[in-house]
Length: 384
Image (cartoon, rainbow, N blue to C red; front, side):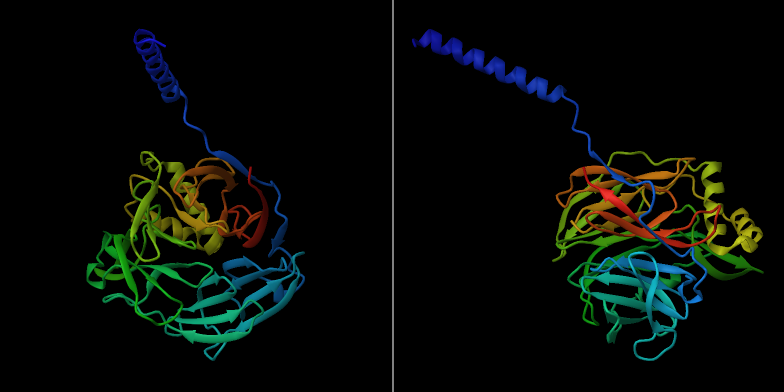
C-alpha cells in the first residue's frame, strides 16, 4: 500500500470510528431489569386466632431460618417466636422480664449471620444475643460517640459489624420543627469504641407544646428520616433529602454514592390522608380522632422524602424504597449492585415493611389499613 492509499485508509478508519461513537452515544441507556414478586404470599402469619400463643401483638422484625421456619420479634409475653414453614407456632423464648435471656421491651431486633440480637429499651438499652436455636449467649451495651446516649437507628451485616446513626442533641430540641446534624459510626457487636465515619442531617422532628410547655418530640409526619444499612464490605447512610445514599467501606473510607436524578415530590392532600390511615391502622381505630387532631396541629412538610427505607439483601444488593403514594397497591423499589449500578426495579406491596430479602424471597410486616391486622408475610422473589 502506497503512502496516498495508506493516508486515505487511515482517514476512512477515523471517520468510521467517529460514526460508531456517535451511534453509541445516541443509543438509549440500558434500562434496569424488572424483578418480580408473586402476587400472593407463600406464608402468612398472624391471622389465625385459634392458638392464643401464636397471636402477634406488635411485630418488630422477622427473619427466615436455614430450615425455612420464620423467627419473629414481637412485643408480647415472649418476644421471640419461631413458626414452621407452614405458619404454625413451634416455640417461644426470651420471656418478658429483666433477667438474663429475658427482654422487658423489645425496641428492635437484628439478624446478624448466625446470631439474633434484641435491643431492650427498658433495661438500659441492653443488647442480648441469642443463637438461631434460641439459646441465650450474652449481653452488652453499645458504646457511643460523645454526646450520644444510644443509636437512633442501626443495621448489621452477617459478620456482626454494625452501622449506627445518632439522635439530635438535647439542647437542639424545641417547639415545632427541628432537625440536628447527627453522627454516623461503625462498631462491632460489643461495647468497644465506635469508629466515626460521617455526619448527616438526622430525623425531622416536631416538638409538641401543651400549656406553654414543651412536652415531647416526635418524628415529623411525612418528614425525612435517615436510613442506614450495611453489607459484607460497604456501609450505607442517607438523609432522605434527595435520592442519594452515601457509601463507605468498612474502614470508613467514602466510596461512590448511590443516586438517581429525581426532583423532590410535593406533598398532596392524598399523601396526608394515606399517611393518617397508615397511622390509624397501627394505633387502632379508637385513636383516629387523636391522630387526626395531632395532624391538624402540625406544620407538615411541603415535599416528600426521597426514600423511606433501605435494605441490603443476601447478595449485597441495596434496595431503596421511595415514598409510597397514590392508589397503586405496590411501590417500586430501586435495586443497586454493590458497585453502585442500578440493576433492577421491583414492585413490592405498598403496605409491606420489608425486613429481610433473600435470594428467592422477601419477608416483612404487612398491615393493610382496611384490615388493621398486623401480619408477617413472605413472598417468592424472581430475579430476571
